[in-house]
Each structure stands twice: as C-alpha cells, then as structure tokens.
Image 1 (tube, rainbow, N blue to C red):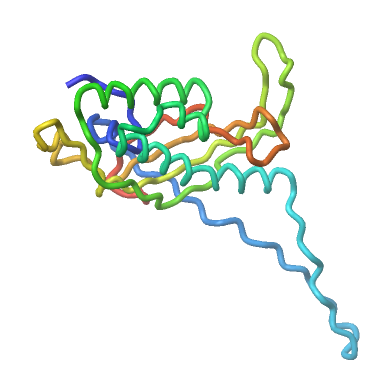
Image 2 (cartoon, one colour):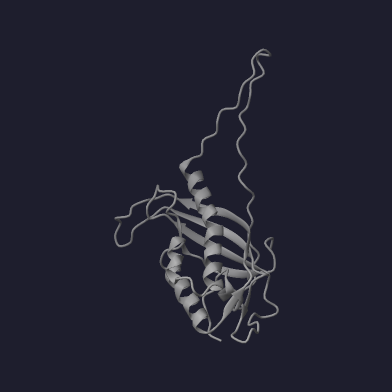
Amino acid sequence: MAVMRATAGAAAVLLALTTLGCSSSSDPGSSSASTSGTSSSQTSSPSPTTSSPAEEAQAAAVELVPEYLRTIDDLYLDPSLPLDGIYQVAVAPEATAQATAIGKFRSQGYRQTGRSQLVTASAASVDLSNTPAASPSPVFPTIVVTACVDVSQVDAVDATGQSIVPPDRPRYLVQQLTVVNPDYPDTSSWRVSEAPNRQAESCDG
C-alpha cells in the first residue's frame, strides 16, 4: 500500500504516526467591566466589547477548520467531486499535497466511509504582518490553529470492501494548521497552507 499524506480524512488512517496528545486551550474569557459603587441611584451599564483585529482573525481562522475538515471528507467520500474543490479551503502547498493524496487514494480504488469530528480547535499564535510584495516570498497574515479531530468513525476500504485501516489506529488526530489570508482584511479569504498532524490516544495528552 502506497504511503500517502496524512489528513483528517481516509489518508490519515493509513499511516502509523507518532502518538501525541493535543494541547487543548480554553476559550479566552471575555473581560468584565468593573463598576463603581459610589452612587446607589445610578447603575452603570457595561460598555460594549469590541474585538481587536487579532481576535477577529483568530475567530475566522478557527471557524475555517470545520469547513476544511468537511471538504477533505467530502472529497474522499465522493470520488465524483472535482479535486479543485480543495482550493475553497486551502492554498499551496497544502492544497497541492491534498489533491495529490486524494487523487492517489481514488486511483487505488479505495473509498472512505464515515466522517471525522472536530473536538477542539484554538488559535496557538497570531501574526498579522502583511507584506504581499515582499521578496523573495510574500508575507501574509498567519494564524496557527491547534485542532484535535476524532477519526474513530472514519474507515477506508479497498475495492473488495475490506478495511485497510490498522485495527490499533488511535482515535484522534492532532493537527497544527497554518492558516493564511492572501487577501487580508477580507474575512472570507482565510485558507489552510499547511496541516502537519499526529495520531493521538486522547486530546488531553
């Protein structure tokens, strides 16, 4: 069986990767405004909270993750879907690697059954530097998102219907997704550019 790029889809379940627990981060708490008790006849209403550009970017990048996973699953589950659908959620080098892996998976007569389930996703780092004309490489706003994905319901079968997934495959997949925005500040332009991952026994390891 050919070695394929690991993803949250069926390609991931074919590889024996290093087991590593994901680092789960709790959601950032909203800041509460302190109120003054100097007057009993006047109540202070909390000031409306406004998100900073960094917070908005983090939220957009995290929101992309389930869409990215769903698109990968769709392409593995339905071989009639065009591979260029990956470009709705990813850019090179990730998009190219995914399209190649999915194409190879399909050509071998394999089929995925079941879908992956996102357990946790949180922004690990934020850099909104934006110099698209930089040489030798453009610099785009970048968010690194740590995600833990449950792949226990994902199976891959060959043309005879036999599973090709190792029976001891760990339940979870931990991904470090690099999410970039070539058209920042357009909030709809976040895309995954890299998504290295590891298999894990839990999201709390």
